[in-house]
Image 1 (cartoon, rainbow, N blue to C red):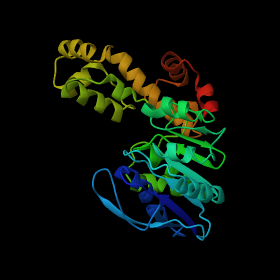
Image 2: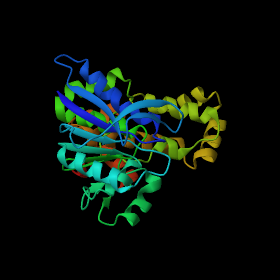
Image 3: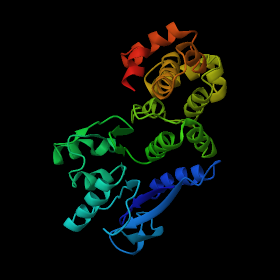
Length: 310
């Protein structure tokens, strides 16, 4: 059984505890339990999250047995940086088979020196500051999670679930990882090469009607998505819908659907081994060639290049 030590400090983000759920559900699968989870901190006792919820953690000590994995959660308060905490993390991380950091936890782990020369990531709003403060890091500003050797990092929030699923896949195989994702009702399991940007969020429609049409489109990419179909789901006439859609998103419905399909196709290319034709079908393109052209227009890369990058 692999023991995972999860470091929490005051002000941690409660959503990061979802990483524990990934390993908890993995334990329920045939052959389990596979993991033993321990909450750790710099002292024994209650640790309050930024939302006020509290967890009980025990102090990590040098006499502890070696952990298979050390995970460091984020915090929205200034991270503790005294020498004892940094030394503890350095010792625990160096002895573990792998380490993982979530969002702003990267600042504290970076102070240990264990990540010098490594590729890492953090939340998009903090990448510039992280690179400036720790110039020896190779900060990847757009990826949701990064693995460099035995060191993992993610951009935080829901990306911590993607990173934890990738760890389960490494440990137990894709079958169990996929089962865990389904049990958690993960709409889309993103690979590390997936960017922190979201086409749907970037469009940022101002009205619920246009948002409803885009949500329907994202959930039904395999179906024909005509302007009439989208207008019907928005509860608008074709003409009114087309005018309002362009005013709110800055582009035509056809262009928006192409971007949504291209984003979904890129995720499948980066996260699996499906053939190009299969991915084209899954994302609503009329064949691999149409998909290739769309990917090049949207991302400036071919399907093969996107897969190689992942």
